[in-house]
Every structure is written in structure tokens, then in C-alpha cells.
Amino acid sequence: MNYSKLLIAPFIALWITACGQTGPLYLPDGPAPIHVPKEQPTDIETDEED
Picture 1: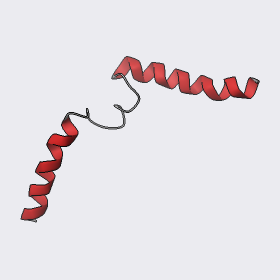
Picture 2: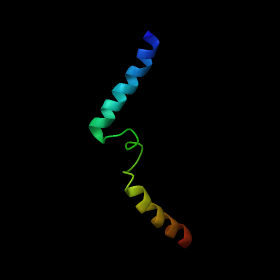
Picture 3: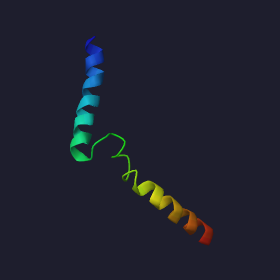
Picture 4: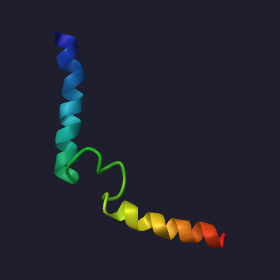
């Protein structure tokens, strides 16, 4: 039982820290999800020119 709490504690702390910075955990992984689809078409054009 103690091991479960020890494993969960860092995740909770990480989640709280992430919430204070940007919000959900998946946001800190990169730019806002809105920016991702906007960058994709630009990357495609760059690849074609290359």
C-alpha cells in the first residue's frame, strides 16, 4: 500500500506543477495543440521546396 502512494505522489506533484504552468499534462510536451496543425502545412510546403 505504501509503495502505491509513493508511486502516485510524484505524479500528483508533477500534475500540480504542470497545472500551474500551462494546464493539462500533454501541453508541456510541446506547443499548444492549436499551433501544431498550423505548423504542419508549413512544414509540408518546406519539404516540397526542399
